[in-house]
Amino acid sequence: MSATASDSIMETGTFVNCFLLVISLVIIPVNGGYDKERDALLKGTFPQDFIWSSATAAYQIEGAWNVSDKGPSVWDTLAHQGRVYNQDTGDVACDSYHKYPEDVALMKQMGLKYYRFSISWPRIFPTGEQQDGVNQDGVRYYNALINELIANDIQPMVTLFHWDLPQVLQDRYGGFLNNHTTNTTVIHDLFGDYARFCYQNFGDRVKYWITFNEPWITSWLGYGVGNFAPQHNEPAEGQYKAAHNIILSHAKAYHIYDDEFRAAQNGQVGITLNCDWGTPKTPADADAAIRYIQFSMGWFAHPIFKNGDYPEVMKTTMTRKAQEEGRTTSRLPEFTPEQKAYISGTGDFFGLNHYTTVEVTDACCTPIENPNYDTDKDVGTGHAPDWPRAASSWLYVVPWGIRNLLGFIKEEYGDPEIYVTENGRSDHDQDPAIMMDMERICYYMMYTNEVMKASNMDNVKVKAYTAWSLLDNFEWLSGYSERFGLHYVDFNDPTRTRYPKASSVFFKQLVRNNGYPEGSEFTKYVENMWYFCHNTTEAEVNGYTGGASQISSLFSLFLAIPMMIAYSLIA
Ligand code: PNW
Image (cartoon, rainbow, N blue to C red; front, side, top):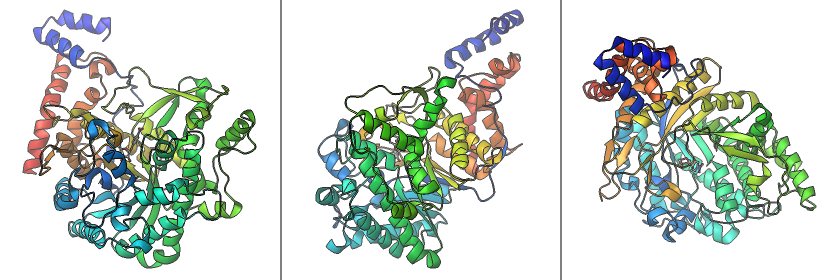
């Protein structure tokens, strides 16, 4: 608030204006760097066939960790060793194994036409290997879920691997570290067998397959840092070996679909990659920001969507590091020419999980005693002081980042069809529960509007937007302490009752409006909340516009949510 603006308020001399000024200073502490052009609300709608969805993952919601013949996964092992916050486990989680009809009913109530969930590999093959036996109850469960979805006019979008590797495969073969540069690797074939079994049993009804969710996490956190399951700590090389195997396993599952199922089933197979947008801290950091993205998303996207091989900058950087470290070979493995041909072009769509943005600085070329993936990138990362934060330590709210990232994917990978397969915001688990989750509403509002800008202004082929998550659930190492759900789940209640948060009502209206159409009631609410959501005021953005506008924006802010809820109940 500038001096001139507050002067003019004082001149009007009304109590109301002073009161409102004080309120707005209290509840709106900082202008989060609002840019009038960049951050303006875009009105309009998504393309007619746009897909609105919500997502979950097996270990995070199913529970029933050992019913019938289900085998343990690496996450069962990790959690049972007490390594999760508060010693939480996924043993019961949201109990979706039993309560899936309620989950489907919640989606139906929200008007969602798609649901992204994952299949637990050890629930299908207890050891991970088909020859050791199939758990028929697992097949029954996923058939029942898929049938329930179809009966409610909701299309399944299925992830084959969302981190819950069968423990036996880790023990027998080292999981994704299995002989990554020899011809005797079995993990590709085993993943292929699992994928084939899923296509055979569910592919008549499932038309969207995602082979791997966020292989970056499995590779780096699972096999490099080793804090995520299976907690293998080998930060110089583990992640490169695991990624190599995951890329080849993905390609195998893609080709099996192509060769054996596509003609009859006519579905699509893609992969979901996670990426933060990396924005250069200064113009001199521009190359570093690109390098950051090439080392994270490009590591997987470049082979699959470009030419079968790792990004140039990754290869040259790692070759230089090998020389500096006195190694004869790079820590980054090489694909053979046959493998490159096999990998290239194995994505019918590009799945993107995006949550946040980092500020990147060049940290080039410091000699490193104990090299690891983080130092290999030669970058530093940080966050601008005015970026608001969510409950998860890594989650800063920077809506314009997703538009930049979508534009980057369009340019870099030949304009693929992009499915946003996750985006969302966490709250702390606290008492009383956060049911009027304004900040999540703001997050969805701002991020989906940026996705619409990418679609309608930048011509990015964004086909889907998926909210993470349908339910509060087991947030990996954070257990139940971080809540991403559109629905609240009480994890102390044995019946795991679900309660809609205000954000589910907002999301329902968003889906119904297919965006932000000019003139709709919904868009009016959004307009009224826009500046609040951006931590600023209309006065600050447009210059002080008088008491009436202050009153109207505060009034609508406090009334918008209850009104929306009332609206949805009668609608
Ligand atoms: C994704 N990080 O994971 C996953 O696909 C979901 O299973 C998860 O619940 C969701 O995002 C929210 O975290 C991530 O540490 C896990 O930067 C960790 C990070 C990012 C994404």
